[in-house]
Length: 376
Image (cartoon, rainbow, N blue to C red):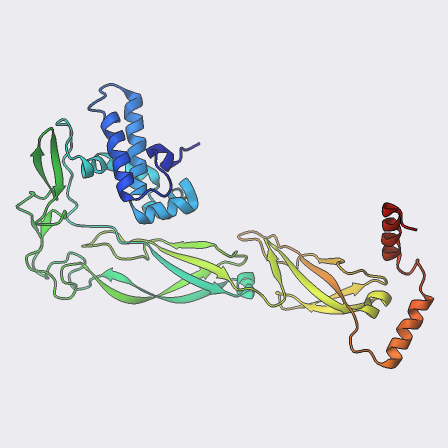
């Protein structure tokens, strides 16, 4: 079982950025491999705390972890663009150097990616009807997002020119300065960590390598989709900076409440009011189902309130399978209102002619109550 990331750093779930950094600083000083040569357990602990800090220091990754736990970073989860939590392993030294720089002369030089950065993931909220969830649909959506600049093809430089290596950091994106015991590494102030300088930026994207535009996308909603389902469209998020890979687009689905049906997994429930006489004498009624047909329900004589009738195969389809749920009809008996004089007379006459056999449940209930409380 994977250890909780907050527990790994020894902080509360409400810890702010300052508390996270302080906790990581203390633990990293204690377990850094340079201070524990040959200690495999210390190296393992250092990797664990580095991974925990890498996730929790990023607001987007932290929010995903708080909601979904470790599952948020597995099988294409949101936290790491589909790379999973393991993808952070290569950045352990970078994480540590963000706070300490080179420690005991054992730091590593960060390699520049030419300023290429992965685009952000995007979220789109979509509301569909229960009928659409039943049958599935192909929806067209329009998403405002950043796309790769078509003039500079993502480089950020004016056509005919190209970025040059930063002279201050020699393309590393970082500069170092000795401060007593530590050698502190910081983001290069000239290129802002990109490792390259664009002397003549593209006039359309102003050196960003991407522009904002509204795109039209087609989204396939499979039959049987449930409320709260998240659909991932890989590479359809924000374009990366200066030719970097695009992020992903996540469609969060919500199903609108239905006027007649309530859903529980693949089963549907519908409450149907019938008259007192229909319940007593028996009868039939039709209900419309989500498949576009009508189903007839036969009410036997003497049906009581709360009675359920099951219509097999008239519920919701099970996502990506051939199975279908059932529709349950729950009976409500409606008491007559605004009676005429003649109707009241007939009901009184009926009541006088009624016996315990006509109302066994009420007669039995009051009889048991008298016996329980010993009432004469």
